[in-house]
Image 1 (cartoon, rainbow, N blue to C red):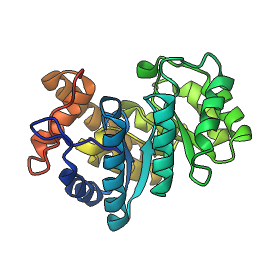
Image 2 (cartoon, rainbow, N blue to C red):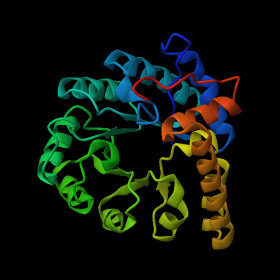
Image 3 (cartoon, rainbow, N blue to C red):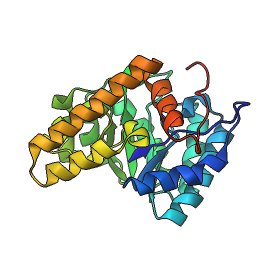
Image 4 (tube, one colour):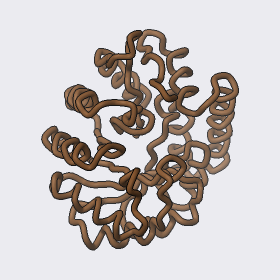
Length: 270
């Protein structure tokens, strides 16, 4: 699943016209699922209305292209999170992902599950996922405990997006639902440990190594799978060396390769 970029024009306004060609590009490269309004989509730099407009257009395109669509609703005020959840549910998306509360951060898994439970009341028929990305959220709760409790307390809780390099702590989560790996540089190791789902920014820019990696791994060719991880990691390192920070470098690499779809600059403070 690609956590898709959001297109902006030269005036830093939404460019919804980029969504359909972007979707077609991804599908042509065997990426048939998208996460909308995630970290890579710069959701936390967008207004609630902007996020709704992006989700609406992506939903239209995903129906047309027969693609799976998940929407990330967190990263804003509690009231807006609830409205974004209701909106995503009205679009009948395939999944809803949410960050924890980012200002009054949950101090325990029970508090995080309570927050998820409030979200679930507005999307009871749609699979719900928790977004674990401690490097940005500064919320680093034990995910094995959270998934275990959430599975018991929330009827539509399905799993997590796990954007941390500590796979040891992620392994127990597999007993409690689906785990999307978010770390681009360790996919082959995650596959070896039993993970089979990923949401990675690099799938927007250079999906070929990851697609081949999963194919080779499924065929039992570990060496070829490992070689593809090396290729992907070299690409990531060269992009960051050329352009700097993670997300700006990935978006600039995309714009450099696919000039006919060009998604614009990242928004401040990036």
